[in-house]
Image (cartoon, rainbow, N blue to C red; front, top):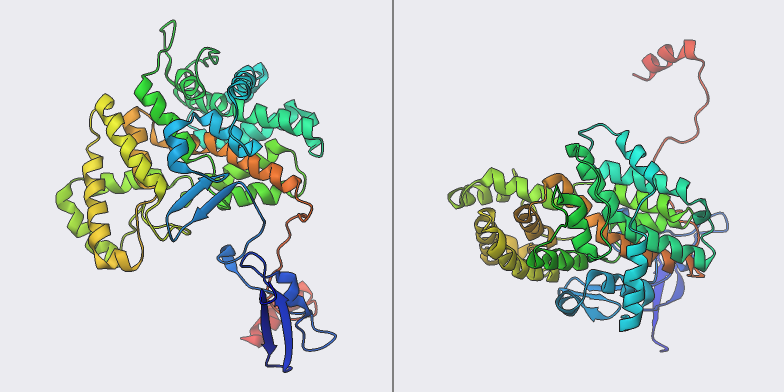
Length: 436
């Protein structure tokens, strides 16, 4: 359309510039032509934490934070969580379409075939201290996989890429389970080809001396749903890291390890663990009013509420809330859920929270369910990383096939000292005293 442009008048020079608008964005490089003279570098945008900057074009995930909408490849997250397995959703993210019956059967077979890990990786994991955090072990071990599969560096080869994608998705639950068992000093359990993806993780995590591990079907399905909800979430911190490191054409194992490092932070993947700590500190429903008062006074943080993107109820939180009731029928009711639900009730009716659009996010209920299912808090972020690997790899593939993408290299606004002359060390004390 002819009117899809932006007209800017530079009041410094009185010059007017016309900049095209595409999909609600302008190209930052178009601002570079706005200069005060030939020696001027041109305008840049300054956007700490990418609050209003699109770094890529993507067809993987659609997110409308104002309306509370999340879709993978166009499919509503609610429909996928109700009808799909996690591996079916992983296929969708990576291939762009839901698989046929034959395609899904082949995909499941390929993933199952690659769930085993090299015996030397076990030796590598044994080198970690007994109390090492499972997320740190996972991050290090995923990076180490690049030494076992050196061909992975050839990221320009589509066949090589696909092989590494399958390996990473397949081996993540194995590595995650082994990281946990290492912490407990338990022997590692091999994956069982007769089990589903989620069931296999539960098997490798919890099996003891029984000849055959049988997962509770309700809990296994709940884990599938949680995996689906965490599979991708647009350009979050860890996905942005995956794309940034991947833009250097580093191998996918090193790149995924960097994404895992980003996910490990309490402001990202570790948020649900913080929610549990908050609920434990509150203790009982009788203490909620006092806690809310402290939140309003700025003395405490209400963990699990609010989101950088969502300004409405996180659609994943609605689904998890439904899953919780099914899980509690098997495990018994986690008493923390009563505190959580009362907190939610207050937040959705109190003007303080309504004004700030602080709605429950995916982390608010997920930790409660994980704890009820028997997962330890140190596993929570690992549980996030297993399914998010599919999303990271879908974004990584898209990056490598995007002709516009180059190595990530943001600009900066320099605010340091201007040019200074070197001062010999014996004269620096005198120079500092003179300035003081």
